[in-house]
Length: 160
Image 1 (cartoon, rainbow, N blue to C red):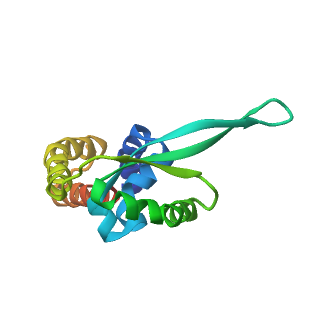
Image 2: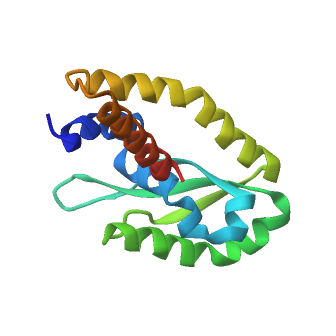
């Protein structure tokens, strides 16, 4: 059994929880918005809004990203929203997001760190079980532990 086969199943479970677009935006949020806005914003959802219909009668939808932003940073976030949309679209190579809808909501800096740490503590045991289930045929305990550690580090990197 290849390591890539074991890890592919783990990563797909996380991918199916969100859509590909949601998944990439959530995992790359800190890179997209930078160190300041990552402390004052969080992506919530992506909605498709009917824009028009083409000559064949097919509906044309545009996708908007809904973001919670602390009120103190909302005006500045709005000022940079075009650059943020451009950066998101550059990750995909096409116009994946038409715009951003800002929802002002208090996001405490401590909550972001705490929420992330709580998720890590809760999910580490679950992730470890999932990884061990996919590599159950490996008899070498050292190799098994190394693969578990590798799988955990990969899933943790994807969550950042």
